[in-house]
Image 1: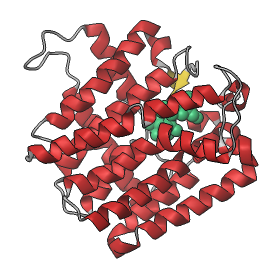
Image 2: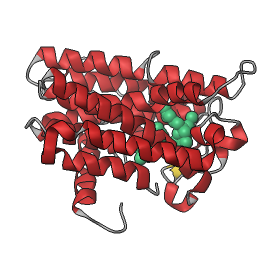
Image 3: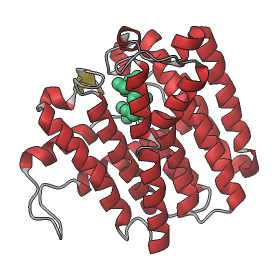
Length: 308
Ligand code: IPE
Ligand code: IPE
Ligand code: MG
Ligand code: MG
Ligand code: MG
């Protein structure tokens, strides 16, 4: 995936490869206990939307935050895989004609272009539900209380008060439902919800799996919130300045759609300044972990510097 390599990129690529093979193993054509059948077109579309691409940065955050507490990697990968299912569903729906109307995702035709709109909607529904199936399994954690905590936290991060709510605010900010005034505070909330919430959950999941102390969890939440906000600012800057061949999706679409972004309210320089403040904030949040937090510190820098 990455052109040049480094110990950090090797760690990221390792999580990506392990997430790929886990999702490949879980998203089988054959039904599992309690299911009646897996319609071929639907499981094929779910696999299309979730396999064969993506940085897998959210699973990486789960694995590396869980690593701080010595959580078995197989448990962290299950939680990361569940989160990636939610993320991939959000992308399949985000790309639909009724939403961002995009044709390219991860360098390939979007799910509704490859299949059809109804199938892409159902593939999203299937992945969303599948995430909670994965979290509920003993393979994710031997203790039921830990699994329930993960389910609760991911529900809140993905739903009306998190990602789905943020997508609503994102569409409203285009002015589709009536003209709306938005400044930096409104953009911050919108982005913290549509993108930040899932990234924050990724970091919190490590603390939940590792039964971390309140102070440790607070540090991870602070880090996750900063990285989450930074991630969307970087995405918005890539939409303006990125190389479409590297980004793997069409660029220049946000301003054409009238999206509210930090770049649209603060300008490119303002958005870059905010991005570097957030990376510093993320780094500070990890101070309590000392050298053990080094990979997550590098993760924050990766968010700001990524080309894709
Ligand atoms: C893109 O997410 C959508 C946003 C929330 C900004 P990623 O940049 O993580 O996309 P993939 O998973 O690597 O393709
Ligand atoms: C997506 O934001 C956030 C999601 C919840 C999917 P964007 O609409 O900017 O993501 P891209 O640029 O299409 O990947
Ligand atoms: Mg969008
Ligand atoms: Mg989009
Ligand atoms: Mg974007």
